Image (cartoon, rainbow, N blue to C red; front, side, top):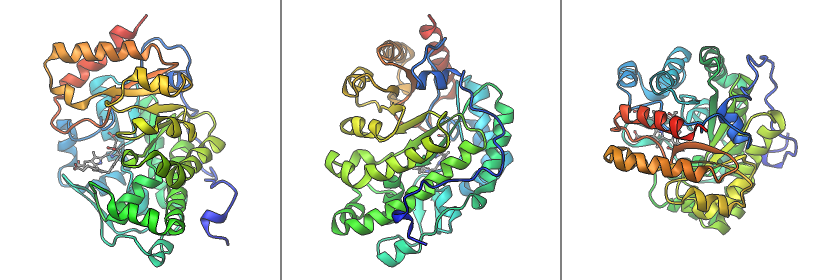
Length: 366
Ligand code: CP3
């Protein structure tokens, strides 16, 4: 069989397991993503499921992060916690971008306070060629978690997610988190063909990870290219965009009803190519105003964002004013999903998050 990057057909995850529920197309999240009218601005928070919640810390005690991600009952409970507590308009699946990499056999760990650490970084052709394809059977627990969740969530949509090829590649090549991504960029420019082969393999893995979540009942997906903001526009377009486009295109082909959100940090210069790569919604971090994001993308895309997570530590009056501004700016977009510009910081007071949800609902209702 031809190597993955030479095959033309889309990577398909045959849904032998029948979808447990249709996507919640009437939810505010899906409607806003599709640029339809909503009763209020939908709101959820990146990293809402996790360390800012005492009930999360209690449940996780004694269980390693990656093990937690593979236990359907635990995944279900952790995903539901912020929905119950804050009344957010969507749940984000509790997992991690490196879960599918571990599922294909890459030796890695998530180290608390550091992030993903790879036992043997991948830098040579031989190492790249040892990365196997992901098969849906290797993540049947993920499908089970999603099915359990969709049953529990009722009318609240579940957002599935995956890491984009560049962000995954950076962890694999650097061996862990990186400030400057120097080895990654050295590979990208020193051996563009090998780089492309690596990203094609990662695109296959992300594609199947998303399709499994979509097939089991997720109502939307988000592709996280968290570190793409470290790239120039030219490098993004040449070395990264085709692979992310492939992931988003596969999902569109197999699950055309599911809105696709594309997010990165510090990606103000990349909003247009990231949106055009096959997204319905462009994630905007706090460095760019929603007004500028809408202008840059020609009003063609719904936007998601973009409260600075650090502002959750400011006095309520300052925070309230900023939330109101963002909701107002969002009215100029063809669709707006309220979120943070990046993830919830671990020491955030969860009660502040609940107040922000209430405020967004109150001020955005017509
Ligand atoms: O609430 C949610 O957003 C859902 C779950 C989720 C996690 N990781 C759980 C997690 C999601 C969507 C992710 C995505 C993810 N993982 C990204 C993209 C999003 C982003 O923040 O840009 C990235 C880059 C990773 C890699 C990763 N995993 C990092 C950087 C970290 C944090 C390291 C640390 O401890 O500071 C992790 C670990 C991780 N992923 C935690 C959680 C809840 C913390 C684990 C713990 O409880 O100790």
